[in-house]
Length: 317
Image (cartoon, rainbow, N blue to C red; front, side, top):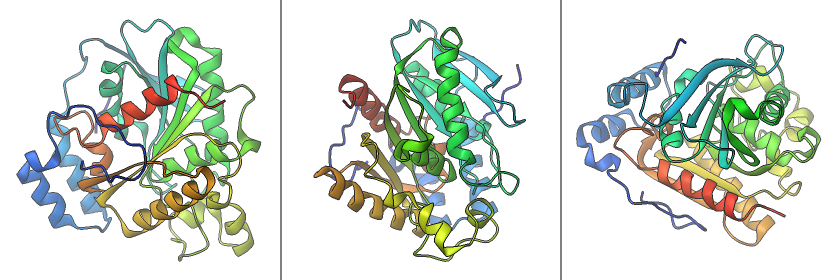
């Protein structure tokens, strides 16, 4: 099988922390380089950030983890997923589906492969999904692909060994939009899907009406019609299915993701009467907020684990 590996928690709501072996500040050379990059997002920042962390990932195979890549979950060429599971998976482990970033027009599940061994070693089945890309695929193809992965999990229990009544949909950057559209929009959800929560990391597109849409990325997926952008903004869809939500953004995240995270915090506070679980991750940018997971830097991974475990323990009714 081919394979590529490319907190201070803000005290906002219910956030739990496991003992951390290190934070980004314990890696001063990396921390300085991330700060030098600032809050912009360029090809150099993306490539440079991945290059900082690639040597720090464990060599596969990892003890206690089984994985299989490029499993087919739908008819499109990009309907492929990778499964990382605890070797002793017996049908009781929670499952996290994770959609990669890439501005809706690029990206690959290999870019979040570092998360797989980490979550599997900590008792969570991790499913990294590819999805159809713009401009060939338009909204709501991402939510439809997320639904297809949920269906695949129900249809193939032996392939993942997880509990399909304990599924968390998640993603970073553009991938977070696909997780959010599935989580909040009931028209895309499967009946009795077993989804118990959502994790949205560096969300860039909750509200599509208050900023200039990037013509090379977001507009390729959502379009440019003002009425359609308003309808496709999930910030106004939060009152649908009220799943638990975890939000995460980096201290050095792109300004758009920081702003959209803030809008989601306010919207979910209004919806639920309490703040959502929120992690504002010190020293991390739009790429490193995911790329550091699986290294000695435990800035975000433990909080994601605790959210998943809490959601599994107290699933929404």
